[in-house]
Image (cartoon, rainbow, N blue to C red; front, side, top):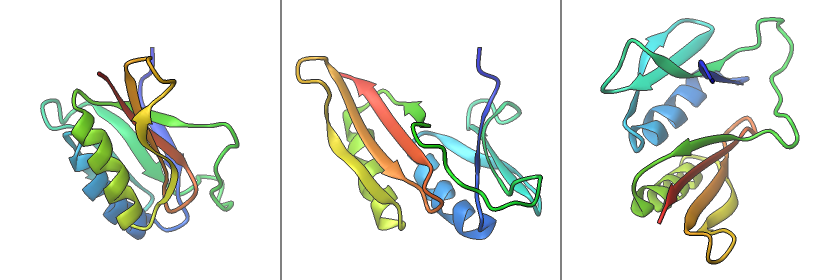
Length: 126
């Protein structure tokens, strides 16, 4: 069971701008902000933070893990497409345009690297 997910950032302000807009598509909103982190929760359950962006506690530079990916699920194919488009518009990098993978699987994915290189996926069953 996953309690919450956390990714590191080297610029909390820019990451907040990025994730505020992007996670809105998934009905997540920022519910906690300090000088070191921001926490996001479902609009329907704001007391249960599911996702954090944070400056590393040890003071070292944040970096992403090769092979590490954070995946969000949605109920709508159009949200997958909007998520990818907005993620790139906000300064993220495409890691895979929206599409069914593998063909015939009935699962529709898109992949974006955030401003710090963290790989973020959103998907839906079609």
